[in-house]
Structure formats: structure tokens, C-alpha cells
Amino acid sequence: MGKITEIRSGKQGKRVNIFIDGRFALALDAAIAIQEKLRTDTELDSNRIKELVKIDEIHRGLDTATRYLGYRPRSEMELRNQLQRRGFTAEIIDSVINKLKEQGLVDDISFARFWTENRESFSPRSQYLTACELKQKGINGEIIARSVSNIDDGDSAYRIALIKARRLNKIDFPDFRKRLGGYLQRRGFSYEIINQTLAKIWQEKTEGNFPDPVTKGGDSK
Image 1 (cartoon, rainbow, N blue to C red):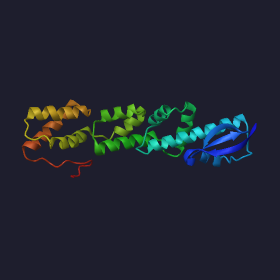
Image 2 (image 1 turned 90 degrees about the vertical axis):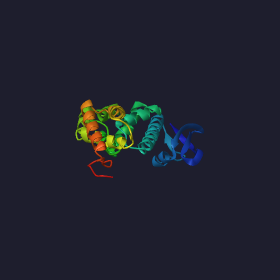
Image 3 (image 1 turned 180 degrees about the vertical axis):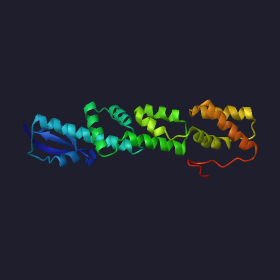
């Protein structure tokens, strides 16, 4: 047991250094020191010090996770991997993830929906490739199956191919097929879908009935 003899502000005032009986004992986020009502003459034993260190680690983990979530929604596995890379222990990571789940900031079902809708709107690809991407992000099979079930490969292939095809001018069908077919193949579409899409777009192109690129839902843009 010892008493806090000094609470010294660190650089920029974001953290404070706690001295017990005249010796440095631990550093905490300034907000944690206020939250835990630490002041000079407060008595701290070893268990309380360990508790404060853990509270501070969770706080830092939440801050790290929140910044990471600021760029875009993340899957639980993405967050766990990021926190692990930043040096947090498994215990702290579990605590951080649980708190984020309570706040609704980590939800693999919502993440899978976001990812699928974002792909469909801005960069269409096949059901298969979208499912592979979600699997890489740690989403379980049941959630993946529900999330990609509404993807229409024929519609997605046509929309993305139409945009690409408008840039392929003055080329014959073999070159058209090679370039556009390879493009669709890299986006995970089957040979059947690719062949149907190429035939449709080539016919529209040669007949002068080439529509504007279409967005999700078929609205012209």
C-alpha cells in the first residue's frame, strides 16, 4: 500500500504520470485519472494499480479501434488483427471487442451487408468473389450466404461490363472478347455469364443500340 504523492502531466496533457511515495509508479490517460478520482494522498495497493493499468489499456484499445473504424466499417476479425498488430493482449482485445459490440460498432451481419451493398453499387463482382472477400474478413458461412443471396450475377456482369465496353472502340470481336472477357473473369464471373454478357453487349454495340451505363436497379445515369 502506498499513497499518491504527485500526479504530473505528460506531453500535451493527454497522459499523466502517477508517483507513489515519491517514485514513479504508472502512466495513465488523463481522462482515466479523472474518471477514477485519483488525487494526491489517494492510497493504492498492487491490485488497484493492476486494475488501473488494465482500465488504461482498454481505453487505449478503444481509441485505436475507433480510429480504425473511422475509415470504414470493419469485421470483428479485422479489428482483432489490428489490435493485435498494435501490441494489445488477447485479454484486452476481448474486452475492447465486447465493449464495441455493446455500442453496436462491431456487428458482422451489418458489416457483411455494408460490404455487399458497397460492391454492388460501386464495383460489381460475382456472388462467388464477394463471398470469398467476406470469408477473408472472417465472416462466417451462414452470414455470407444470406448477404450474397440477392446478388444477380447476370445483372452485375452486364452493369460493370457495359462501363468497360464503352472504352473499347474500334476493335474486332476477338479482341473485344479477350479484353472484356478477361475483365469479367477477374471479377469472378462464370464462363456462362461471361459468354451471355459479351454476346448481348456486342450485339448492342454493333446495332448502334448501346445504352448508357446502368446503376443498381437499372436506372440510367
